[in-house]
Length: 485
RNA sequence: CGGGGUGUAGCGCAGCUGGUCAGCGCGCAUGGUUUGGGACCAUGAGGUCGCCGGUUCGAAUCCGGCCACCCCGACCA
Image (cartoon, rainbow, N blue to C red):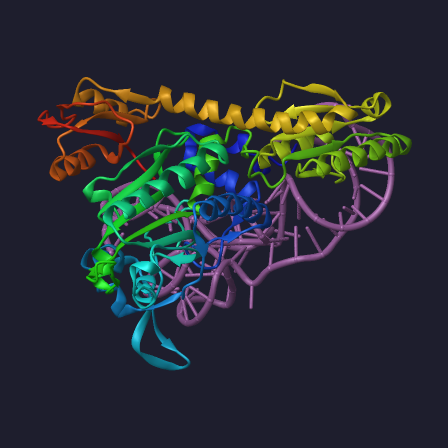
């Protein structure tokens, strides 16, 4: 008997999505637990994935005119209190350092849950003139939020992210920045790198960032029909600029308060990627960010065969590396079948089988992770051309499948009863689109009755107005409701 | 913070009406046979049974107290 505990499909099918998710995270070697509750260790395979995501995201951040900087981990606790909504939102989940160097601190330090305050403090010093604007900085760092309930990648006590913080001369400029990040950085990243079809929209008042004027979000549907807020871009208006005195003298000689934005995306995206693309065999890595894009499985019986196979493997590896494909050969002392399953669990986009028959014919067998049966035999000279092509095909297949799934689980209901039925049915659970009266009370009632929240007010929406999905009063807000992670 | 549950080898578990109860499966190590979809045989290594105290001739097992973790809710990127 094989080790049943080692493979995902034997333990958890998708009917127990939560368990399936944990199995994939741990067995694919992305992360492990930690001695501190709610924290996790990210293993090399998971961190390599994060690095590729980081690079792709960082390229977009730079391409849109931003620079990276670094701000301190510790923040004076008084800073948090300067923005009323901000402290209300974050105080309950902040870790506080009260002792250091063997002494009690005169003012406790908080471990950053996000950096608007300390960055606002610094920006106040750096901004004097309209000529200093805009200030377009980003930082990659860790933050800490003491959550009650945690899950690897999706919600951890400490997580890694990027947080951009910008300062602008006008309200219009700040709004343009907020949308630029939403569209050209986040949405583009989700579609082109992660193969995740996101929905762009505005957060309702109750769901926006504490202290923000407006929060834009990219929401994605997971494999169980629930929603994951995957990245957010906030127009902070003048709230933080006022609290931290970010002022400048404008061309007209007047001293004016600046307009700021902030935006972030975290290791939570790793969890999203798993839950959008994974299947019953395990992970399915989007090719652009996959740590290993093609895995070579050599097959042989006799020593002579091994030599012939090894020569071809080396040739194929070199050819693929030359065209920028992240390829690896698996020479472990295991049977091929074991390796097939192992690499499928880890989600490698393409498997390359090379056996004695192939060595003799100067060919290899390619198998995309998206279809076990779509085996292709390719001459060794064609590998360097075909593999990059197939990677793109796998990316497209993942995107198409995710989009088709989202569409099949997105509903426009005729009644609130139907709304409730869908949200109570695991087999149909998904997004429900409809009109909303705009009343926070109504939104709260829906949440209390169904656990669903307004994920966003999509930017792409029908014109006009209609009866609110819950109370029936005419509303002009078009909303997406869903249960969320 | 409310409700429920669990702590025995790296992982998953059995033993729990006190006395061959220190065991099983997987994993790990060594050797051999295997190898185009999850291999098999043999031999090994590995645990003060969550912690502290009590009852007893004797405690993984019974009692008390701690601690930790997990699940379900409320809160949340």
